[in-house]
Image 1: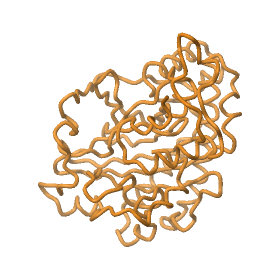
Image 2: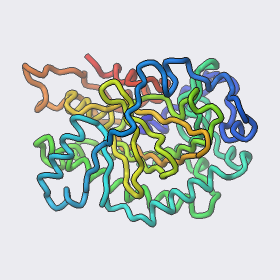
Image 3: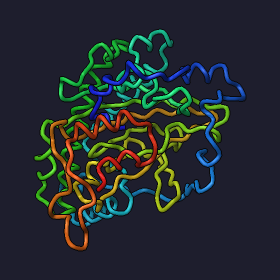
Image 4: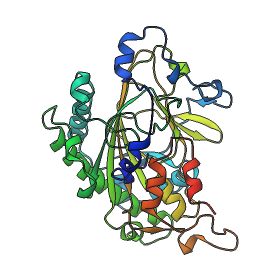
Length: 361
C-alpha cells in the first residue's frame, strides 16, 4: 500500500462495484471447515503454490539503530547490504519506547475485537483507502484477502479524515498520535543512515521530500479454517520511501520474496520491520529495490500488525538521482509527480510490483 495517497483515492469510489465483501472476522465465526469462494486462491497463488517455495530457516538482517547513531561503520555496512540484498530488515534499539508500542498494539487489538456495528461506524468506501474494511478491491470477481483493515492518514493534517478515527477504545487517537510521532522520528533517522550508505549527505532524502506524508494501516488476520488456500495479504511492494511494520509475535505471518522463494520473517519482540519502498528504488535507479512481500494466515492463531508508510509530499517531483545514472547504469525510471504515482497506486489492486511499471522507462 502507498498510503501517501490516502486522501485521493475517494475520487474513484463512486463508480466502483466490488460486490459482496464480508467482514473476515464475522466469516471466521461461522466458517468451521470452508471459506467462501472469493477468498480461495488459484493453485499457483496459494501459499504453497508452484514456484512458491518457503525458506523458513533463512533470516532477514537485524540492524542496531543505536549503533548506527554512534557512527558504527560495521553497522552501516550491514545496513547497506540489507538494502542491496534484501530490501527488508528488522531494527532494534530504534528509539520507539516499548510502552508506546505495547499500548498501540493493545488498543489496535481492542478495536478489532469490537462488535461489527461499532467498527462499521468508520467505513472504508469502495475504492477508498481510509477507514475500516477491505482496501484495494476494485471489481466484483476479485479474490479477497483474509484480513480486516483500519487505515488512517496521519500527516500532513489535510489528509486526515477525523470522522474515521475511532473514538472507541478510549485513548486510541491520542495513542496513535504519540506512536506516529515516534515512528516519524525513526523514519527520519533511517533515511539519513540509508543516505549515508549511498555516500550521500545524510539530509539528502529528507531534504527533498517536502512535507512528508505519513499514514498507518492496522491489519488483523483472524484464524482461517483453510489457511493453505488463502492469502492474508496479496503479494505487493510498497509505494512509500520506507515502511515500518510492528507485528505481534503470535506467529510468523509475513513473508518476503528473495531469489524466487518466500522467506518467513520471524518476529522479534519490540523490534520493527523496515522495508524499502518504490520511491527509494526510483531515487537510487534500482540500486536499492523495493521487494514483494505478502502475509499468510494461520489455522488456529490470529495476527495483528501496525504498518506505517512514510513517503514524499504529493507535489514532489521524483526521478533517479544523477549520482546513480551512468553509462554503465542508464536511467531506468522517468521523472514523475509523486501525487500522480500515489493515485495510480491506490487505484490498482495489489499485484506484485506491477504498480512500479508506472515509473519505468
